[in-house]
Length: 329
Image (cartoon, rainbow, N blue to C red):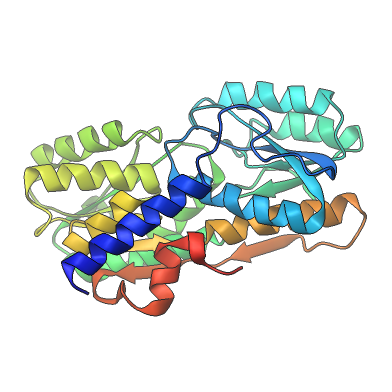
């Protein structure tokens, strides 16, 4: 694809995202439709992660189809777990029939989830699991498998005598735990002393950036980095770009923000593990709508993730993955 055509694709995508996903910062974040009100408690409702914008687009599609009104709430920052707990408590006190919860911590939100169940409120979890039997269904990427794909790719790229670093997002969140486990399972044949981390970015690109700069200064034999979510990948990519060393330090990341896609095209990122956030949002609302109406739901609903390299990023299927505003559920 020529540079001009690629620029056109990016501009079109930006326009679509701006037009369709410029979510207001007030509740509700989806216009009321007259259906039954349910609550969605996200890890973050801030505008800084494109992943959650696409999740919300999927929710909007499902809300129309299944006649529910999702009220989407959550802290501005994913690292603010205490605030998410407070928000969940307030939602429970409003006594809705159902809650779709993307938990920022595997354990700390369990007491409130159990309080919801005790009041007869249906709980479905999205993106990140809870250490509880309360949720009637869990809708998410198979993060163990996704992490393994990233690990196998970095194992392929980095010689055994070079070090590999793991940069995750929030300690204790299920997505981070499972992705790291998947990466480490793929690296089990590598000398453990050649594996650095896990380091946590607190979901802040700036902290991921600083971490990478420090790692490069400390470990001259660093050969690869696995970044386990969007903001960690963006921060690591910026560091490698600014230092001009992405030709010798390989970065494998997660998700598909516009900046990450640009990094992939330029070779700053060698591969991205791309989830299906639109599908996840759609299936989360569909599952909750079915559950509150006492229709059967699956205990676990996995959406797949695909490893995309620079060499195959322009295939028709991967273009749909990289620009999910046009993907079909």
